[in-house]
Image 1 (cartoon, rainbow, N blue to C red):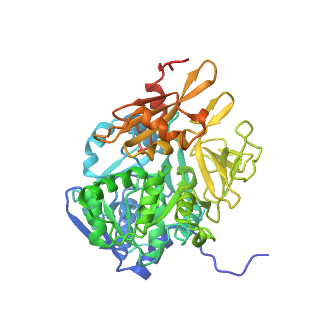
Image 2: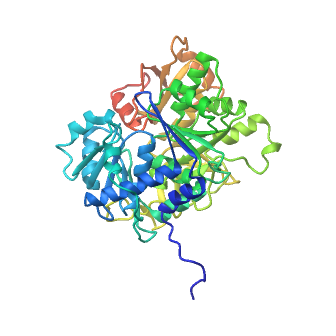
Image 3: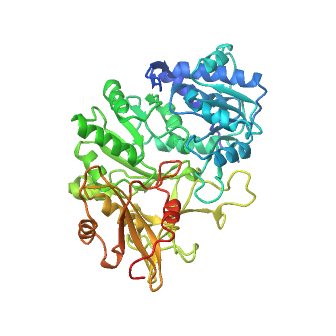
Length: 529
């Protein structure tokens, strides 16, 4: 027997329809790379997306075809998200920070038909055009070409019809090992993710929210913000440049209440605030993801009265998996205890289940005791089942996706990540968390950045070394770092060496590249080894 409710497929075009109908005059602001600014509305974004749908049809783009973008954060990029899926196509956001061989691979693997790009990336386009074998049409966002292209249409059309399980978006992993892998999101999974993401215990969106997303639209579905923002009709404030002075000016002028970015974004903003004596205006929620936020960062934001939503996720989880929200006993906790809580990765949203399993057997579930560390696995309706074009599932036992993270789950369900399975250091049969060592080092005033890797040792198999970048003019020494670490870590976790470098290698998404760091130190010999 079937239920008696209306059929209403969960397709993401409902999001832009709702935004235009219920929040049609709400502004979308863009600060462009040339310093100019434009203002549009949700109603105008929907109309332009419908025009783009018409224009794509004239190019011969079919349902299921991939429409790629190579662009920063701006309103025309937002239009393209809805215009691409509006034709029944699959939006493929390309990360311009990838290396040429990765750019070549993902565009050809995706079989992109159309590429929309920012003028700033013209050198990439000219370099890659001969290598991209499937792209037939190139359209520039910000030289008048995009507006002329859609301007020839009237927007009097309808979105493509289809099943809610049809694909709508394609994002590739950063490819730290081997070629990048494609993650193909569905309309249904994306809608469920958007509905969960706007909840108070997550991104806390409503119609009063003014969101400045620093997380790029080309990375991990921009954390779902363009979809969730439409569901609530938030005011988006976009910047095509990530200069902290520009971002801060926009925050103050536009009354930004919410912002989202990786820890390095907030570090740069802190430096700007320290240099100018400014504050963060009306900001009330800082969403931090991509990598673990250092304690001092969380503490500083919370002392300013800003709620920190410390999130964990990955491309394969659409990407929200867990978010740090106030616990039921929040008001009973001291400030230090509240900071401790927020520094963890938070609890799963409804729709996500997590567990930790033995590092030696990925089917043996470990207790949620806040002590027992294991490999993190996850499942749910917006979690990957298989990679794009892969023949085999990416899950364990057909259910659980192995994230590659290592962590513990506390009795209240809070996740605390301690490492990556490939980065955890096994010394004398015991595990050492490189992440905890890095976080302890990052709390030292003179340390700008720190990374911990394991080095071969003939007796202990591996021992940790700490690679450190000093802050400008800092006088921090290896001895001072070790004295500080001794107060925060087990004695046998103490790094066997501390090496100072000018910079630590990062990957295309801004995360520290442990792979490149290990290569840099592959011939390193410990003194007592």
